[in-house]
Image 1: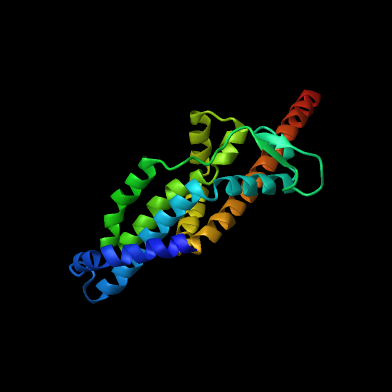
Image 2: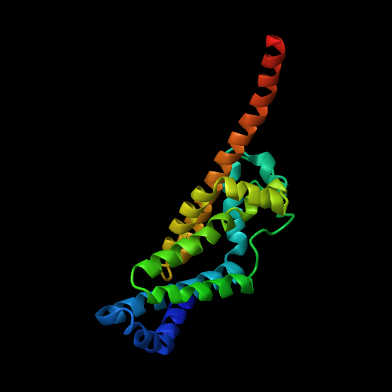
Length: 224
């Protein structure tokens, strides 16, 4: 909470007026409101990056894994950590083999600031900005899932391309929620839960397909 308020206050003190001056040429009388929304977005992004990197990385990993265990996909989770005996999903989580949620990466922040000028275009620019961010955030939400599946880069790209529209939709919703200053930390957890539930559904679908394929082959042989 203190970190979020500190970042938001700092950004308003040092960046609000310059950005409002620029937006006066693009947004006219709405410059003050547009600049305020932009500063809130920037503050929230910085807060979320710092929080995920230094404060809640392990908690997000535990949340993702705990949801998978609760959805009876324990075998998948066991690929990335020890699983203890017990009934409570969170209590069953043991030592991590790998930590999937990447630390701060300059590329992500550079890409964010490259897209940031789009916000100077009223309405349309902001929509484009959110969609572009969402296209990255969607697949990023399944970083842990991809790691547990032990997929190569090519396998991940193929999977993401297959579910491109769904990943973009999920990412856009996640980005919008995490734009809320301070509350973005809460939405980081809810987005992680949503991503884990989706991954569990995908995994159960894959398992069903794997069980169905041999049955179809057997039926084909009998038909011959």
